[in-house]
Length: 138
Length: 133
Image (cartoon, each protein chain N blue to C red):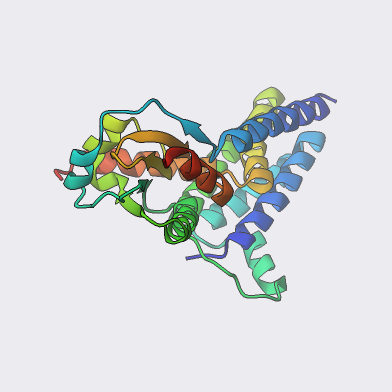
């Protein structure tokens, strides 16, 4: 009989944890405009977009990173003046620490002044990225 | 590189088997699942191979094998602890360890979250952190 209870509790707790994770994963959140990240981009050997930059931190063994790359590439092609920059987190641990990146993929939305205005941890939905750009762009 | 659909199928099957273990407290069934985990940690998970045999369509994408294999190893550790619990007359240990493995398998099956894979990444990251850029 104990087994039944253990099973029910485990399934209930795990379902709750899974639903919380699903709700939060990939959500594009506002961040207060950080100091502009032009120097970071230069350090990464990348040019910012004229109007916006989608800065993606990825790592190896990361299937959502590949999906995010597809999404962000499509968005950058749809929205003129937007650039997609992808960074290997493991090769730039100092930047990762400075920007407080905790997992991959993490996408930072930078405005035309290369200031971070939004970020999403986990694979974002294409519609959410487009909406975020709509807000971030003048 | 492996077919992620096979992994999900294996995760559901594992969830089901471990649920039965919880309900029956069967050491034999847990031992069998431990054997499945052991094979899985070497890339030979029988559930995944069954899926491969049954599936009619080729995979649309593949993912690296190392993290899921590590996850199977973690499952094996839980299963061995659980088995020890059941055999040593400590059924609560058996139930809790089985529940832990079940939680991971169910998270993977229903939500696509692979906890073992996350552990693998954290471990590989700390191993390479000492390497100068």
